[in-house]
Length: 288
Image (cartoon, rainbow, N blue to C red; front, top):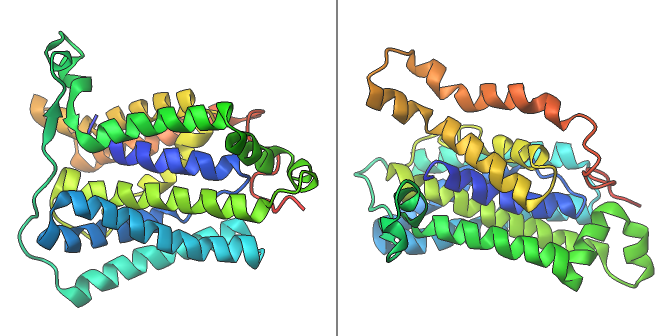
């Protein structure tokens, strides 16, 4: 489940963004920046504060994307590509400039849920995880409830399906979309931070490793629904952890081939997104 956490956090935020009618492919760069900031902060303040710092910088970077898309009306894919490249470049340059190549920082320890962690088979899998895993699960539940049971959720979904109705009701489409984008940025930044303080303990250039793009694929494969995103996250999380299983079994499989498993899975499952009628109607456009 540890490998699924950054994917789930990023996909959860991207789901909200896309439900509002915006696609942000720049989350790959946000993950990278969040990872670097988390590493720097964790050296002095620990992993908990580092997770918050990653989310905060994610909001800042996504705010730039929001200005480009919501205010300037830039093409979403072009703006997202620029943010992705900017984030990857800044994280690499920042790492070299700060010369943070020191020892590993402290990582988040697993937390056992009393009684439940002792259940057979799934006890250790689901109830003996790091706290960001529980935050991700709770967050998915809150997002599902918000989208379906609240006025905010109805308005947000309408921004992606029927923006004219939102405008007719006197609501600000720009405000809703900007808020959704920054929520997605916070999730992506936290996902990047988890790569450092939840997994590696160090920052390595390119450690986002396409997870932002995989998160976008997860949203599409999950048919823009929380249950679908949760299932797709588990599938891709298992694919991402395949390298550790191969090492544990002592199998002689080329390392690069194992690392490519999540990306190969993305290509294999891509046909399932054809004719996705559940996608927001004005996704990727300004909906004017």
